[in-house]
Length: 69
Image (cartoon, rainbow, N blue to C red; front, side):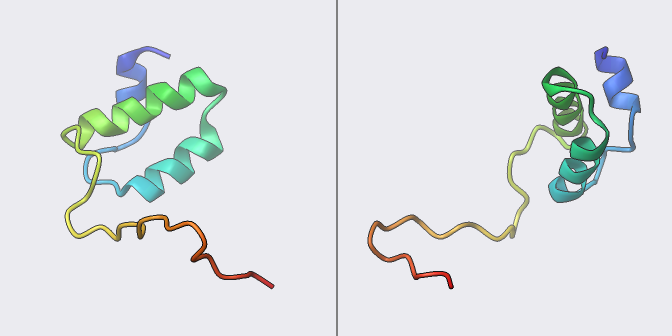
């Protein structure tokens, strides 16, 4: 897939990362195409890796995990 094809595959600008992930996961054909589409999404959204106000994962602390039934 060319960079132009990846850029035109979806309307990436303004799309939340979670939605882009699901579309890419569903439609990409192999790891190379996944990377091409993820980079297209990143380019369209200014190359920012985090959204302002996005929920952040808490820091990992060994021994503080709860048991899942």
